[in-house]
Image (cartoon, rainbow, N blue to C red; front, side, top):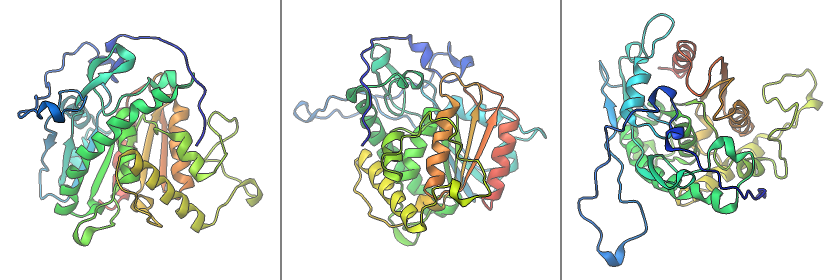
Length: 349
């Protein structure tokens, strides 16, 4: 494991700064989560927030159901807000993704409200708690790193049954996941750990991943599993998409090593999720194509963090499409919608 420099800093920001979309900063949350109907007896209570995950916002296909896409919103938003805006976004030709993929069902879950320690312990919709990404580069204490773990495990336990239902209904190759910002980060951890373990679809891979303006939690640990001791975040000249005529310019690993590293990453993430390790030589995610889009002027999640994701996924052998846009912390319309549509078409939809 890599050591992180300690950060002793008590910076506190206002709750509105949590929201991912500037146009939503002043909007009240009209979809508060419901309270638990039957409280656990006092002797069995754990110190958890009293909130639960609201029902997902689901948009049915306009024809025979042939595919499902599950997308996760960013911190401070919810499934309905994110879903309505995403589906209203048009391509350059004036078509929405829903209009182009008639058989696609869209599932937009909502994160439960949990306390955000960095923001005076305010309750906010978030998949997991974490130090703001633009502050993490200054270093985090181990306690701050561990803030993420409970939410990652709890959210994975919530999302897996949703995915399982869609895989059983269709097949794993017709189910797609992804998200925006923290939703992308959560989606990546789900991608790297998900295994369907029921019936004929056992071990099948998901059809694709769509990530927007995201990052990868525990990047340093995951990168160290792939290439031990190789700290290349913020290294100059480290372009995972560079080309060369000379094999000497590359550290080319044998296929077996890549698969072994992928298996270690899968087990590491599953441990974070509090799931049993799989010990699979070739985890299913190896065969899942990935789209990653990022704004060049993203002030909340720097584009270098998105490049980090693309780099480690490629080093494990995944096929990654990386796109950059003249945009901040949001997806670019219509250019990014065009690229997502093109990507989905390459996934045999």
